[in-house]
Length: 115
Length: 112
Image (cartoon, rainbow over all chains, first blue to last red; front, side):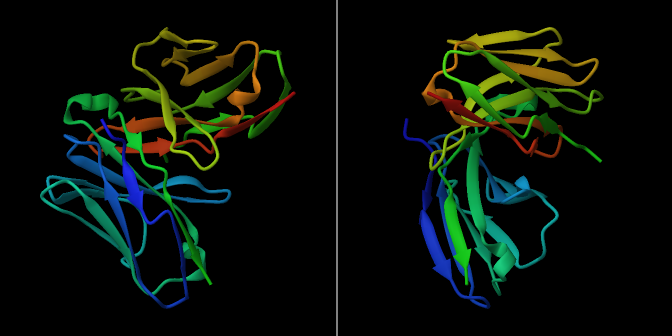
């Protein structure tokens, strides 16, 4: 099976712009989660989607949004970019069968730089 | 506050030496603990999912133990090799929230 893929891998944007990142989960996985990693902060949970519904959201401002399509692919959008949004954004998918252990499989990430 | 803490933050080990590091997590409402290995420019790779107190799992030269009553897990690497250089993350799933809470990671560098 192909792994989780994310596009683009690298992105440079200017402050005030918006950006859309894309994630394709492992075939058959219906849960997709997004995480942000900044230096010194570790991986911070953004949100999780299952069957096109957002089930949980982390503590991020409303400028961060996402959606999931019927084929389980997901996008996240950041509007009005700030310098502090520069980070690695990771997507992870999870099989429904993982239950309480909530196994997640990660993509390689999108490195966003805001100038 | 649900904190997952890892120590040390970074570690330099001579090739061939063995090493270990720690993950501590909330001991209440335990469901599982995940260990990931994250090499630079690659995807985090799942190493172990540990679910039972006293669990010990092994994958080649890497093993992990779990103590859910006191809220800690150890990751051991025996006979370190340069390819073991990576950041090792532990993560704790929050039941009902479909998310993982990650530690800051231990950055391991193996010196040849």
